[in-house]
Image (cartoon, rainbow, N blue to C red):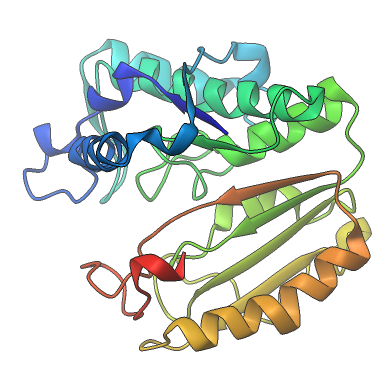
Length: 266
C-alpha cells in the first residue's frame, strides 16, 4: 500500500486566523504518529507531487484557481465563515491534489493495489468555482477526472463516508454516467445537501446515491447502508477504480458530528 504525504500539509493552518478552528496540522501529525507506532503497516511512504494547473483545470475554473493562488500570495485571509488560507495554503493544496493524482496513476498502472493520501487541505466540499467547508480544490474529483481523461479509465466509483455530505464532488459529477458518487452522511449537517431524492440528473440520472443517516447512528446503521444500498449498486456499476473520501468525523468523539462510530468501524 502506498502512503502519500507532504510537509506542506503541516503548513496550511487556518488557526493562524481563527485560533479555535478544528482543521489543524495536528490532524496529519496524529496520523503519522499512529502509523509510526504501528510500524507503518508495510506501507511505502511517498512524497506527494504538486498538481499542475492543467490537472486542477480538469475540474476547476481558471478564475477559481487564480483566486486561491492570488489570495495566498497576498498573505491569505478568510474565504467564507469556515474557510481560511495563509501564504502556504496554495502550495499545500497543489500537493494534496497532486498526491491524489499520483496515487491514481500508481493504481491504474498496477504498481500498487491500494493507496492512502494523508494530505491537507481536504476537498470534497470544493465546487468548480468555489472554495468552502475547509476545502480549496476537490482532490478526489480531480483524481477521478485525471483517471478518466488522462489514464483511460472508463468507470470510477467515489465512496464518501465523511459525516458531512460532499456537495462539491456530487455537483461536479451529477450529470455524468461514468462516475458513480455514493455518499453516507449524517442528515441535517453542513452543507445541507445530499437528500436521498438527489440521484443525479441528465445523463447522470441514477449515478448519484445519497444515504443520509440520523444523528446517533452507529456502526450497525452505517454498515447496513453499505451492505444493502451501496455495495449492490457498486457491483452493478462495475467500476475500474474505487476512490474513497475517507472522512473520519462520524467517530463518536468528533466535535462537529453526531454519529457513534468507533475507530474499528472504519
